[in-house]
Image (tube, rainbow, N blue to C red; front, side):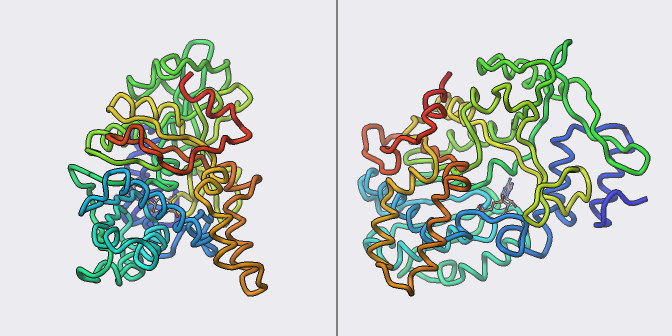
Length: 390
Ligand SMILES: C[S@@+](CC[C@H](N)C(=O)[O-])C[C@H]1O[C@@H](n2cnc3c(N)ncnc32)[C@H](O)[C@@H]1O
């Protein structure tokens, strides 16, 4: 009997499920990251026009150009050191790295290009291959241009800028529901020939007091996600960042907004071919699974690790403050030839899409008082900023 189309993933799921239900987080880990059958480990690209979803670096190169400005501002705030480490987690197809490296090489100061060392941490072997091809110029480029390399683990000590673009929302997450008798966790079990959700006690001690610890209270029947791996990631990078910044772009909210009773079903979703699926457990390995990021928890872990909040806003306000409108005008003017480029760049600011759904958070160590751009414009949804620490 087949649970899914890929034989190796099918065997892995069957072997775990025969012993009983598994926490949803474990199911998500196998379905997305099984080295042969996982969604992100398939030969075809998952992100982009032909994939299941499109991210900002796939929307327009102007996104990476603005992030390159942030890298330059961080480098300057650090006193223009001889070496700037930029470490990107979960780069996928590597377009963000491509656009940043191209921008630093073509329009950054020479000293920045010479200092620039870009490290990509990507777990998917097929994606690594495509990154190697796409970034060959910088990976093999020698001393004259900014350097890039692929690694499986981040450096122990980082001085520079850490990037996570739509990385955290793809980490395996626990799903919890508030019941009369306490928190119940969602598990996945085999029911007949199909995968189905079932409930059980929290599988990890940290989950038990989670919402109380954040000052959030779920209503009876309300479901919400908790990503312990995101917390772990933040704790790890807080330890490793000696000086510089962490820049996170992702779908998400502050805890108070994310866990508000109006979001009764939580934010966990499954997508196939740009469409949300009603049955996220069906066709594992072919379905993208994702949940929004709790930015208050990220901030809390970062502050516990000694980092400071430099800013939190939404993508459209961030990019406007980074000067995207002026840069676009200067580069493409009003010419018809630039109309397509302007249109795709405007998609980054779409208030009904990437512009407001994607939040941007920057954290720093050793740069207190430095004027870092991107966060001086307040989003209309002031609530997400105001509620960040409550
Ligand atoms: C949602 S995709 C985003 C890709 C890219 N950042 C973008 O925005 O287009 C998430 C990426 O993170 C990678 N990833 C997830 N967990 C990882 C881990 N622990 N280490 C390295 N890469 C990881 C996945 O393989 C996938 O390429």
